[in-house]
Length: 105
Image (cartoon, rainbow, N blue to C red; front, side, top):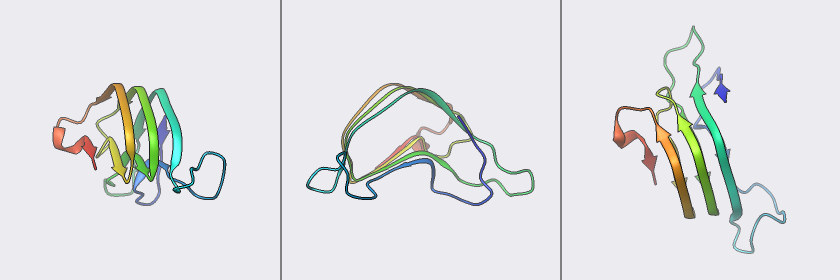
């Protein structure tokens, strides 16, 4: 998956509860999210300075499974998790050479 942004954004994929639905529990958390088998790459516009873009932002999510994901070097932070519980990762790779820029809570 390649992302082209004309403005700065927090993350390529933003996963958070928006409205009342069957996927949202009584405590307001989005539940049972599964992400698998893709790569993320940010391609900044030629005219813009290098934007800081993260890969996946999880907010107020319960029970997340991520498998076989690759975050290319253009991604600042691979995964940002806020108010999120029970995250399982398997074969998740970041090409970013700075390990401090990988997972944020």
